Figure (cartoon, rainbow, N blue to C red):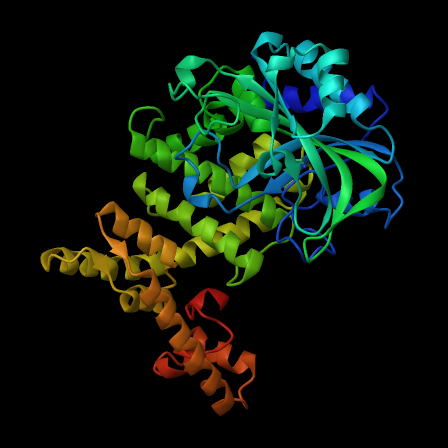
Length: 473
Ligand code: GLY
């Protein structure tokens, strides 16, 4: 079995031998790029090299980049492949080689170094990319019927403002048994049969803020191979969570909680979510992110709270995430030495946030249970927006958390009502700000930090902090 570590090393070595400089992963917090919250792909740190804004020291580079993507947070653990944190292997050319090298190298690596059977591989190309077709078909020898032309939605790659271009993907056919059974099932189908493992992007345009594309002077290559996915294929397991990259963390958590993976779907889901979120939080905090109420901080807070809540599913009611985080650090520190250097800080941040949230959760959970019971007794299937907002405002319960707990009991939450209550609060906050202008933020914070709990009107309307609980203290 090829471990995640071995795949990572093999990939970097392969490209090093082909003239690439191995660079360490860049920070998860993008520098000078307001168009994105997180480094979400291997090419993000290199945008200025593709555009010519900066001159790279090396024209060929290879990395294993830490990435965070959060739009599918609810799907984590429920599907085989969704993650908030993942590692992306990539090779990059800044105005050096183009398709003629990127395509044959990708084929050589997957067939000769990863030993994936050629007859199980499928290729996609952008609709009119005849050049890529020719290279795949004539030079590499992939049969024409296994090269599929696809549209912009799948085969044109872009991320925020910056360099972008048409792309070509390599898929593995995992076999009929993994498919949906539909006669139309083919590459691009939503089911689990065809798994995309590598995306080769032919960088040749620049996308501006308005969504206009202009050709770049120098063409480049940006590729992305998801480490966890490839590991799942090579290790012959059904999901990324069953690879060594996750199992070590999940087994550690299971031991901690006196549980076992693979016996109960609810426990399994909790173990997966905790492993995923804890990886994301550990790496993000080591790169300088901190829990907060906005932007990146809110993402960290949300991930951490979801993980804590899933800890309760495992029967863990004390702080435990910082211990899982230590397991993440132990597993990943060789590939990412910064984890070890920052470990004390990371564990302290996680533990503090966790302790505070557990206190908040205890108070809010009782109230939410009462609301759910009340709704059920009255034959109502929805928690009102006002109640959800009160939980958010007073106990720091994110809407998603209320929704998740309510859904477990078959109830929904009135989202429009929640948004309306939030807007109301904003209006109140604006007028309160005018009235309390003499109070500095520090002054308000001081009162919100337990010295003046008797004046809820003040902290409930504090304009600078929509969740006036005590985790800032
Ligand atoms: N930048 C290529 C990818 O993330 O797929």
